[in-house]
Length: 168
Image (tube, rainbow, N blue to C red; front, side, top):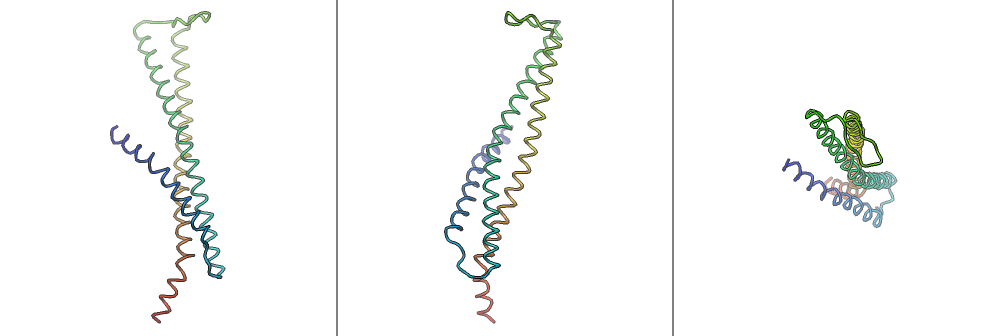
């Protein structure tokens, strides 16, 4: 568990850095566009800008939804703990749970069922969010790669062509 906490800490620091890096590259490339009149290079630059914008926005959403995921996981664990606590009380012979008046006493099986249902509901919600997190992280990475490659093509093609023709 210590390694998982360490990995989580690193990820929490890396994600905002990566989002900032993405938007910084986007801002600099928009501020200083390609000056070559080649339509293909301009198109590559436009693709790079759009891909970096998609990567940055997806990263922000990914970062925002992670908090909701952890909240659901925490609530699921809390419900699981309470359910197990009441199951233990049931094995000790307790059949009803005294509640704060004016509520009547409740059957322990009802309480266990409620916590089991809540645990399943929050766990299912967390699983859905986790799947979305994986999809968003994949989209963020791929869009970043496409954006960087497109900008390198748009900005480096003239230099590569110059070197190529210089040695011809």
